[in-house]
Amino acid sequence: GSTIGILGGGQLGRMTALAAARLGYRCVVYAPEEHSIGGDVAAGHVQGAYDDTNALARFANQVDVITYEFENVPETTVAECQRHKPVRPGVKPIHVAQHRLREKEFFRTLGIDTASYQAIRDEADIAAATALPGILKTCTEGYDGKGQVRVADRAGLAAAWQKLGRRECILEALVDFACETSAIVARGLDGETRCFPIGLNDHRDGILRTTTVPSGLAPATLATIERYGAELARGLDLVGLVALEMFVTRDGRVLANEFAPRPHNSGHWTIDACATSQFEQLVRAICGLPLGPVDVLMPSRMENLIGNEADDWLRYLADPTARLHLYGKASARPGRKMGHVTFLKRS
Ligand code: ATP
Ligand code: MG
Ligand code: MG
Image (tube, rainbow, N blue to C red; front, side, top):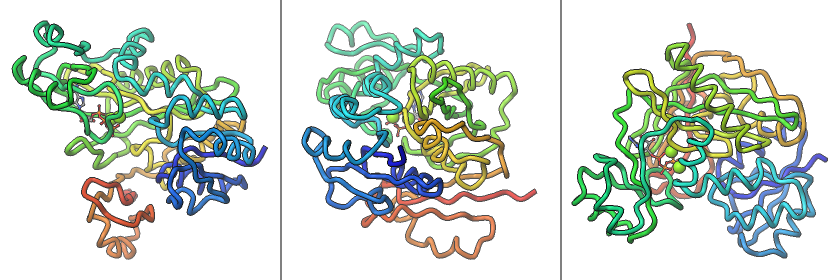
């Protein structure tokens, strides 16, 4: 098989299609929009709603294997695709990732440490809450820090729960972390796992700003981070990629935050500074090729271009250490990821 179907029309699918093309594969993007930035670089684009079974069948008929580029694609859509063609990473990673309580419980069953947390479904849960100060998050649909509120005490928790529409939520104890990191792990058809070198992630307002590689973390901490990533990939029984976001505390504990079963913003540095990019690794995994080497070619720092930060992109063109990536989005709304730059640090 040589055609890959991608559910979702965003930049992660776009960069997957670019990597696939380099290996001689065709991609067909499925998205609700008539035009998408993923479809712009793919060989084909099928427009359809995520619940349009006829359009999904037409899409599936054009491809040999199907992947998804965002974890909030409806589980029923993925299951429908699975009736026609293999879907990799699969349905289970979507099922677990789409619900924060389910996700945290899954971590615990795999022996992956997390901050303390509790379900908030009614006033009684609020009255009994102990994971304070904390962060209240809706169980479904949040991303880029949306759908979450910091709370200091039970009064604040009650107000925050109202603000979030009295929906099913998770209250997580606020972690006083030393740094944030993520393990991006590929798992092949044969079950082999391979973890990309670990970077340090810096967030602002709930959005990733920079990733720096190497991380400078202690070897014992790195070993835990990589072990958690591999345990998760095996536990989800996935073929493809998974990114596990974690906190590292000042005393060296590693606590899992959440995971995404797809390429991850914190892995964009791999395009320019790693022997195999995360996008190529995904293509290799889902197409049954051997996984690629993950050696760091050069220390680097990836910076996101968010909102109007991408406006003066011309200045990066003269910088020999800068590798510019623009996603081709039409309008720069605040908070929107428009592109990124990887700065290579020559020694
Ligand atoms: P993403 O865009 O990564 O999917 P999201 O909306 O799903 O974001 P989280 O990753 O859960 O949200 O949280 C966003 C950021 O908020 C984290 O990267 C971290 O900086 C901070 N954060 C989240 N949970 C906690 C916590 N329990 N303690 C401390 N900081 C937290
Ligand atoms: Mg998230
Ligand atoms: Mg996150």
